[in-house]
Image (tube, rainbow over all chains, first blue to last red; front, top):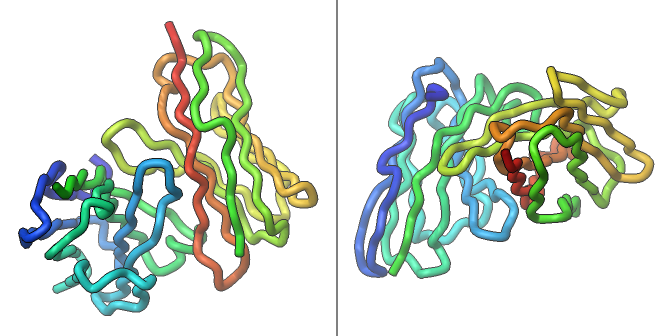
Length: 117
Length: 112
């Protein structure tokens, strides 16, 4: 375990379902992120949160809705997804925003493998 | 816009072989470069970070080099072991205000 826990590890959903991905870190980090890893594509940064405030949304479709109730928890709410949204969704955290710039350590969770039918 | 390329996408070698994984980037004015490892079904773990002023970094059997002028980095793995089997990703920070840009990764299989 890296200190970043993601649940569920696997999720299969239909296009009309609503589901949520959860991420929890007990590292005392202040910044948390959602990344998308699709087959044969580079890792894509989706959302950035710092001290539970969203600081970045990289043009992510509104069918993905993040929520960060506190610095330790991050959710990704999913609704009316498309088959092309099937991917591994990785949560990461770092002490501060430097992590996403490679300035300090980014700690990743194991990911949630999402399949949209 | 920075682009990071890792070729080949997959590599299979016999145990004990010394090997080199390549990473190339289009904009040579980088701030730093990082190599990550990803095991199947797992997240990424940082292996080595090279600042733009550095030529190489070493950790155990791993050595990463950086040649900014040619837009290239290599990850050298000495005496490969089956436990080295994983996907290796290269990520580049293009500037002080730029976030990491990742390559697609190289999936390495070390055969016993």
